[in-house]
Picture: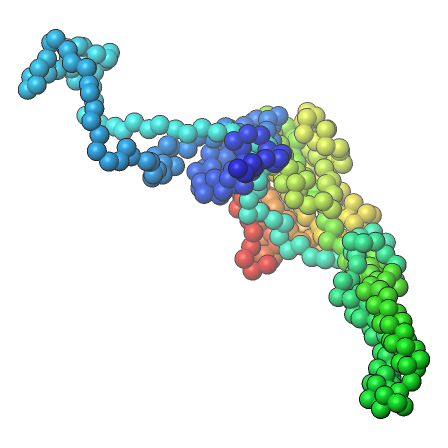
Length: 427
């Protein structure tokens, strides 16, 4: 009898492999449910797990069952009311169908049973950010290279067992055995030839003492050959690894949000949800991406994450103040030849009279030549204003690195986010 002991870390009846197969198989249904969940969630519960329902008819599979087989004799109990050949009447009851249930029957519609299960936080975020990436991410040279990668640099006689080079060690052992045994084998062959010559002599001329001496020498040589070890610590060779500085793919994302009086609280909540999606995406997929949060009304200010998402401010609107601050921060801390630079801006499109022209000039002459990607999201249900028109000219000059979309309501956030950061096939 064989016993199988399951020591997997998963709980009983929860195989991780089978769960991943299930998630891959019904990816379309799950992604639809995830998209609906993102659209209806608030800022505070954006990253928790989700309960997903799939129509049961979509997961039904044929099942093989063992039948009774063979011929059987069954004895069933009889009764006093019916005999063979009787016809049974339909049960009486309310409803148009004659059943016992309440309400009337319908000749339309189809019932649907659902299979419900829960996605963990990690699984939920995997589906949320599936197929997304930072566009045009490049490796940059950095003066103070902190990123290193171990590379092969020949062999060494000292090292840890995990780095042992088996092939080279066996080759060294073989060479050592050949070198150490070669003189012994030559001496052994000479002794064996001398013994054979001595034994072929006439018994009268044969020297018994010499024969015994040669046999003893042969035995000694054979023992010495056998004593040569198969492998010795002298033979061991280890792969030598050295840390080689590598070009870095460091990136910085500037999150620019309009908090002026023209932005209603609903608009600000939409902008915060968009930036929270962006924050979770960068935090989850990129270890070396820094975030810079900039809020602006008539004046721009660099703030921390807490103040960016939860602080309340109001005032007039001068968008160029935020772009000017971003330009100053880049010049002071993030040189373009060492960093991948990204900017995401959210606004309602309202701006001070002639400031939109200043924004266009800042982008075309200073920012866009250094940026990898610029995304502008306008949160308004109304017609576009001067800022949108000026940004359209910027997009015409930089079609691959400048993207702009409009968000009317909360349900537009996730589709717009996926469109802005979808994986490009040409990259």
